[in-house]
Length: 312
Image (tube, rainbow, N blue to C red; front, side, top):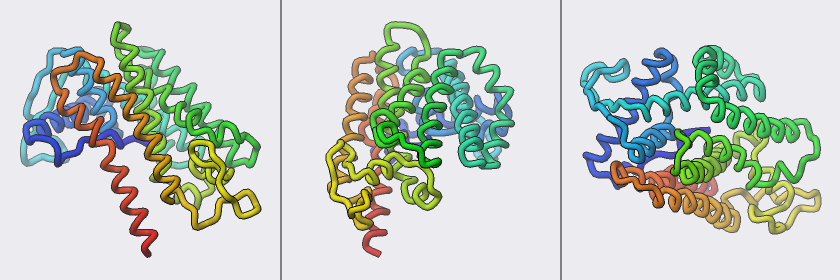
């Protein structure tokens, strides 16, 4: 599900990209230090963004060091280390464990069971240290699992299954709590950033997986929306008489694409608005690059692939 909150490398200065990579590598190193080498497998860009955002806001003492790593043993790489990166590493494992457990329970993926078993001891420690974040993740993933199970079992749950705001909001709910590191005056804005980024991530993942989910019979919020003959904004759409949207009408159809892009843009607008209220000076250009440009790189790739597929 994660990996959509990334930089637009072409729009970053070399010095800024080097700094970004130092946080990415620093987070990888922190995962290794706290949870062992296998935990480095769950490294993602989204918690890298979290580490940069919290560092820029709280300005903890940060050490930059050059080290070699297993993947890059020849040359040393700059790695950042601070308390915010440590927190991001904990949240990375928290999210990865629940995602792996969900993969096993929902689709019986052996890889999910193996990963969950590897992270279990670390997860127990995190749950004890961060009960608020843990409860938010567990509760909302459970609700999402209920929606997916009802769809797979053919049980009627039309309101939940096709309600984009509700379903995407479940991911938004737990990411909102993940983004709140401390109980202080900044928590409301951080919670807003996390909430709208969480919704954005969920919908981007649904866009990317829609064909795969259709083949496997898995739940996808966009498939559920289209199958019910509804537009993403709730407007009706012509059907073929069986309540199905005609085959030639896909998620990348012009009318759907415009509406979905409007929804995604609205989410990023709210996340960016909350960020601009925070007194972040350090690393602000990197954060703005991600919020205003980087998050759309994957969307452009998906749109381009859909266009190529349609031409074929």
